[in-house]
Structures are given as structure tokens and as C-alpha cells.
Image (cartoon, rainbow over the protein chains, first blue to last red):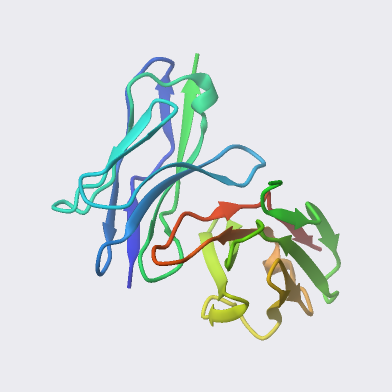
Length: 110
Length: 115
């Protein structure tokens, strides 16, 4: 079945550091890919999405490119802030409901 | 739109009691998902409805769990009887699925503690 694998956390970075969170997927067909973010005590919020190969999703300085050849959707940000501290989930949706990775906790220290 | 609305936000109950969690979908959405989140198992899909019909309930842990959509905008998740291992955060999410599937919008969750 469809599955998502993302890098284990936690990830701790200093403010203004570069962020990469790796995500790879297994799916039949051509799924849509998503990154969700969960701040403490809150539900999941959509951060960005890409619906076809080579699409780049972007929002709030975060970017991810749908790479079909490597079945990847890595999340990047050039300069993280303390307010980016949260748990990040990679997800896919094909012919099934959303399938999530296990989440990566990011802590950004000033 | 107010988004997906879940109630209650927090629930503490004693083992053996019945618990009902509620969810109001975003207006116009036709798919509804219930997820459970724990530290050990992460986010697990419990059940998925499309146009009020349960499509996939393979994630429902056992017969103690049941979910309904009495109408197009509302759903309940019931646990009877509840057990301490049911303690988790339960999320409801909705989406509009037409020719293409879309992203799901999540509620704030219900934190359930069974003592």
C-alpha cells in the first residue's frame, strides 16, 4: 500500500540555519503530496502541496519539489526562525485517504 | 468559514464509560476522516467517509469504536466501553473530493484521557 517515510527527529537548529527534512514515498499512480505542520496543542495545518511531478509547493519561506524520479518531496527553508518550531508531517493522497509519515519535530533555538 | 469544528476539546472519563466525540465538517466538503494521534503510533487513520458513506474503516481498532455521519455536515466517533489505552488526541478532517482529491483540513482535536 501507499506509504511515506520521513527522517527521524528531533532536529535542533540555530536561528537562521538552513533546514532540510527528507521525505520519500511509495505509491501507485500519481499521488498529490503535502507537508503539514503541527504547533503545540493544535491540529495539523497545511503548509504546502504539489499535485504533479516537478511541481514546487511553497509557503512562508518553505519549499518542496515533487520529484517523481526519486519519489521524494523534501522540505527546505533557507533561514529558520524560533517560530518555526513545530512537528512537520509529510503526507500523500492518491486513491486512498491521506497517508502520513511519522512526523519530524523541529526545535529552533535563538 | 469557521473550519472543521470538534467538540469537546478535552475529555476525561473513567474506564468503562461511553465517550462521544463530535465533528462538524467545512461547508461543502464531502469527505470526512477520523485520525488518532499518540506518541507511540503517530497519526493513524481510523475511518474515512465519502458522501456520508463509510469507505474504509479498516483502521477502527475494534468493535468498541463506531463512527457515524447522520448528515452531510456532522459526524460522531463513539467509544463504548472506553479503556485507558484509548487515551489519545482524536482529529477529524474534511476535504472536497471531486475529479481530483484535495488536501484535508483538520480540526483542533479532542484530547481524550481515560483513567
